[in-house]
Image (cartoon, rainbow, N blue to C red; front, side, top):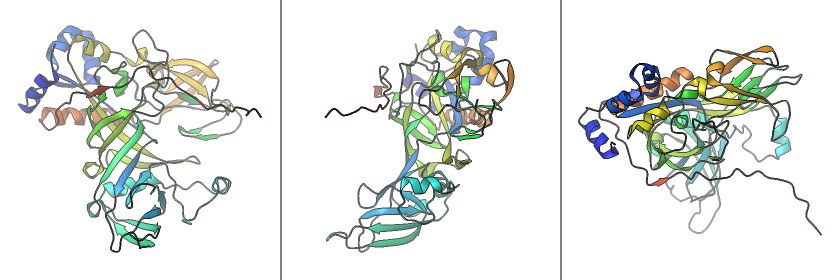
Length: 399
C-alpha cells in the first residue's frame, strides 16, 4: 500500500515513476499487474472532446459610477448576469446574438444557427485577445449607471475561471441515423440510412473508465483542465452511477459525470477551443487529464482494461424520443477500427473526440508530474455512487 503523501514526496524529489494509461495497457501482458504496481507511482489518463455543459465565471470589476448589470453580451454572445452586480456567467453553448435583442424561442428557431458562441469567446479570452463588452444596468441608488461598453482582456478583470457543471462523461453513446434525411446532432452530422456512425469517448484512455467506481477520484481531486490546474468540484449534472455495468465495472452507457473548476487565466488554447456543430450550434472542445495514484495492485488491474472490454450502445437518432431504439452494444475496440456492422451492413465510424490529443493530455500531465510541477491531492469527500437518473414526464393536473 502506498499513500498519496508518500507519492507526493517522490514527485517533489523528481523520483516518481509515472506512466500514461496507454503505457500501462501496452505493458500489462508482458509485465503483469503485480510488477507494474510495484514499479509505477502514478498513472495519467486524458481526453479531449466536446464538453458542452461548460462555462466561465467572470468578475468584471466595478465601474465609476457603478453598474448593476442585468443584460450583458461578450462579442455579441449573451452572458448571464443574474448574480452580483458585475458577476457574469458565460455558457459555452450560448450562441451569438447578432441583434443583441431578446427573441422568442420560435423566432430563435427560425434563424440560421450562429456559428460562434460562448466557447469561442472563452477561447479568445484565454488567448489574451480583447473582447467587446456591452452591458445594460438596472439603475438604483447605489448603482446609478444604466449602460457600459468596453473592451476587456483576461488581465483587465478580476476572476476568470471555468466552472463546468458536467464534464468527463463515464462512457457515452454511438450515434447513427436510420431515417431518410440527414440529421444535425451534438455528435455532428449523421447521414441517412446508416450512412455513418459517430462516438464521443476516448474509450480505454478515458479517465473515469479507468477508475469505474471512483475509488480514487472525489471532491477536491486535482486535475489537468484546459492546460492549467483544475479540481473536481462536485458530482456532475446527469450523474448516473447506477448505470448497468459489465463485470469489469465499466458501464454500458452514460454513467458518472463530474463538475470541474479551474483558473482560466492559466489555461492554454491548445487544450481549450471553441467549436461549432453544423446546424446544431456552438460548443467547447476541452482537454481534461486525471492522475490516478497507484495505491495498490487493484489500481493497475482497473487501468489494464482494454478497448475490446468496454462497450457503448448504438442509438438511432432518427427516432425523436428521449428513449431511442438501439442496434445493440459495440466495443471501443471495434469502433476504433473505423468500421461497424449494423444489420449486416458495414458502416463507417469516426470519433468526435480527438484520440491523438487525448493521448497528448495524458502525456503532458505525465511530464508535469515527473518535473515535480504537479502533486496529487486527497479527496475531501467521495462522489456519490447511488444517484438515480430522473426524467421529466407530463402529468395531467386533476381538477
